[in-house]
Image (cartoon, rainbow, N blue to C red; front, side, top):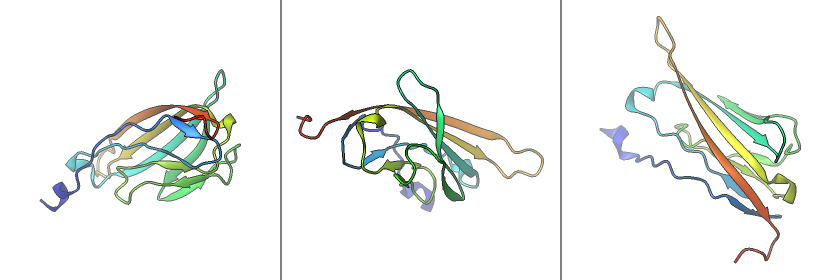
Length: 134
């Protein structure tokens, strides 16, 4: 019953960021009870308007920021139980507008087969100049 105490709610991310501030890209994927033993891998992709998806961040046991225009500006903001797999973009620029996708893969350590569970969340982010938000 101890497991039920942590209530997980899949809330959508904010979609507007302010230039020069930090922006948490929220990605929550609640686990069913049987998923607790799974190994979770997270991949974050960024797609500029009219561009292609680019892998910018990966997390499996350790955090791994990939070389991109975000280098040095991404921070892991997820929870220990890997239900919240959010990242924060530090010092947002106007060029950071676009589509962010977080892909979650859960692998189960069963003996015979390792079924995969995948889910994905998409955030359409708009960056506004400071003082514009009201």
